Length: 545
Image (cartoon, rainbow, N blue to C red):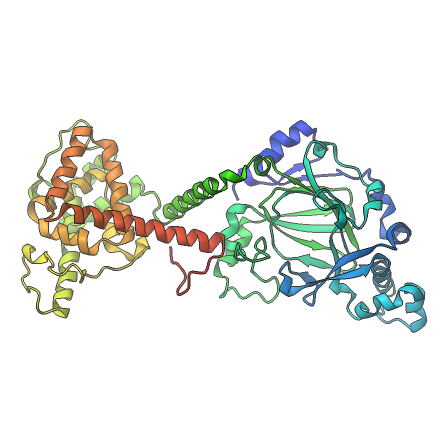
């Protein structure tokens, strides 16, 4: 977990200015100890101190919308996993009384007289459907205040017992809601589209949080679904073979425990999963973030494209980690050993030092590089590339006898462009030997290898680019071109590309092969972004990047 994403823990209620600048604007969760300890609700609603009787008197006649789940104690957000049922608040209060009696008595059995005494004859009918499994009922998100739909407000009377925290007074409030469970309950993992302040009135809640960057391991439901803000990973009978990335989800998580009087700020977009003890009561405040309130609808398409592009680039970078100087030095050392029959000589030291220099700076680019001018690592890379091309072309010739069987370089000019030589659609660096060779070479070394191929093996170079360059290979090559550009002067850059592309019979075909491959790589990364973060199903095998 990055230090910048660590949950803040505050022992005192922060001033409004500090909360906005240091917590809310950074989208970081924060536990505020004793934030609402002075609420009248904390003392008046406590079930252990006559709170159920108080609530019965104040809102017992209200009919609320309760959540009914056959998966209890887990309550999933998907509508297929629960239903919303109208329930007199008095009936729920009496179910809470049954639960308290069960906990105190320990027998779990009630006589008819005890049940009637606890429920009262007037609510026995309302409670009857839930007596056998009262834990399946949960009062979730019952409105006390709603600025968007006042008609939905069901418990407005209770607002007298709670006070808006001072640091929220200037926020664009959306709603204030009651959350109350009579038995242990667990919410499915989800995020909210608004900032959230969760305040504990009575009981205890344990909250596990994941930052939005952990979306990948939580398998969110499809963006077009009605429960798109929920994780599809089940909390019961979890099979990691169906959700392999979820096995590492706890590495990205943080856990907090909240008691009566505490509050937790949950920023928009942060996934959270909540466990509630028996008879826990909470109130939450939802308000719109500054980012969302300042986004104009006519800019949505632009923001979407910018975000998708940024996520696509990040996905591409995860496939191609930065090659370190150590990796490059190891590549050079390995090449030396091979070219010297496994013996290490003084060249090792020279090569290590060379890997740290910008070899191309201050040097005039030679338009042609001969084989005897190459350093050992370049010779080894050249040999590997040529061997790969020859091996694949020979395999293709065996499949198509009408093509030339010559082993000379000129034979590598494959006649039928429709029959590309082992055009493997690889998107993984580990699965692509050509891309691997290019990736581990310093840009100056790769440039000399390519110029040597132009001089001595032009048709091999053509076959490599036109017929063997996979999408990941094209991405690797263009990134190396960019590194070369940073090291070369403008004149040297122009000369290199002129020499390189003039070696092809069709310069535009070479450019197309590289650019098309690069775009295919980006397309696969883009599909991965949609699949992992939005839940788009492209059909067939899942992307492998």
